[in-house]
Image 1 (spheres, rainbow, N blue to C red):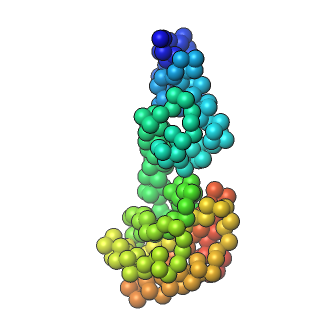
Image 2 (image 1 turned 90 degrees about the horizontal axis):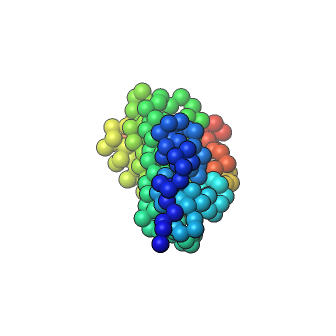
Image 3 (image 1 turned 45 degrees about the vertical axis):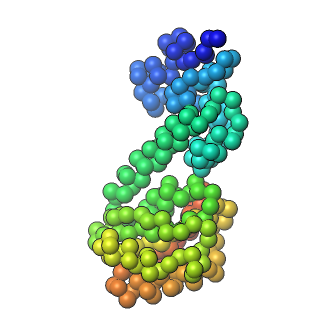
Length: 229
């Protein structure tokens, strides 16, 4: 049985050749995905599989980025198995890390600078994740630490662990953050309470809490910008 592979197409129609001669920026999302998928199945090319996948994700790469290997396989796209799902997941993660590595080198000057970083880091998550950005004296990001998952409460967020991490990173300031998968950016009472507790505790170690930022795909909310710090 003959395989329907990209290699069988005319040269001008091959995404790899198009990338080689015209540059990756000139390929569509489906063409880039087709390169990762590599080969199709009888009756369906890699490009058609890529289009099927994009349709399942509402043509949104952020939606695709939320999916694990297991979730991609559960889409039941014939010809898209675990091996191809692993390639896609790895490529999306590399793209995210490339973006984050650029932002990490920048000096943080405003809540928007931090929010752009955090939206890339947390905006695509399907569960609520709490994290901390540790900064040096030049307001550059030293590290991001994922602290907890599943909600903001005094029991879930261990302030002692946060401060221990800050000391280990030799951080002079930090930004706490979490995402709201629902898209609603309004802080809850629990959000406000944990912010107050962390601010008071960090002052004892001469570490500044610069902000608490809530992010979603809809945007961000800054405690500092709203005068709540």
